[in-house]
Length: 244
Image (cartoon, rainbow, N blue to C red):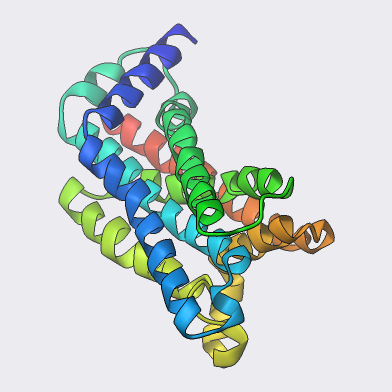
């Protein structure tokens, strides 16, 4: 436990050593929210209403957590740090936990900044904002888990492309943040509904509107993905440990 705590603190320090990436990860979704709100004022569309737009932007912003977590673990793999840590009693579960714990507060802070910005732009303050924020955590676990999984498999340069350009675009287009998935329909809609991104946005919208019954069943899909990805990351990382 002491080793885990030390590793968690060390991981947090590594994150804080790159303030520009932190500012970009938190600031870019806010800029998008401001721009899309401005567009919505000139082109009236229910999709651009803050109550519907904010949960989607919050989920999209979490995609940057994948890049952070992937770069962390890939960088450690390329150095001698992990090789030394593999000689300690730490298990793969504790390693993955040590990488995840510092990123969760960062993910929550990112969502808080999105919702605060929405309030400043005119969104009504309601008690429903709190559960909407808390329900971004399962989505955050998915994105962090994807990053840890990719970071365990690929180099730092490769994960930048996968978790940077590819994943952010996939989460943007398949989440239903920018357009109604029903308008597209067909295979595209079916794929989007199988993946957890659109369900994560639906959960946020349901919570923010106070329609808590609509959180189910999407929450089960999101929790299932989060659990499966976390377990897969642990298994892959354990395999990497055995190679050293």
